[in-house]
Image (cartoon, rainbow, N blue to C red; front, side):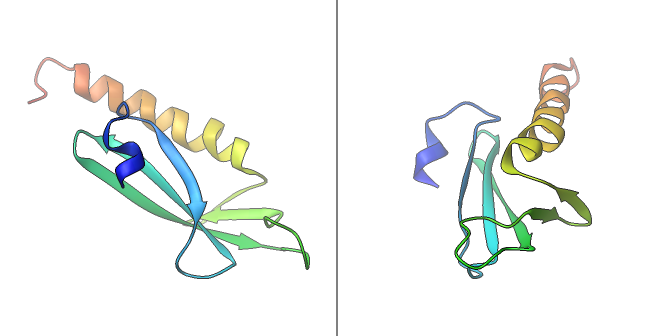
Length: 90
């Protein structure tokens, strides 16, 4: 994804999914030249709402996008930095 190509490792974007209106895609710069696309399923989406009240990644349920950032992305980025900074990482 061109938006993240020049960004730092760990940067991310939420965007509409090509899978339909009940999905969102999390696009995350996992490493240099390595972009990951994760499907987020929206549940309990009222008619006319822009986003569902339950967001599901795999089997884990989140209440909003901010919770995904705090409970999913930030911990993953923390572990990623630990791996990248490890002396045996090539």
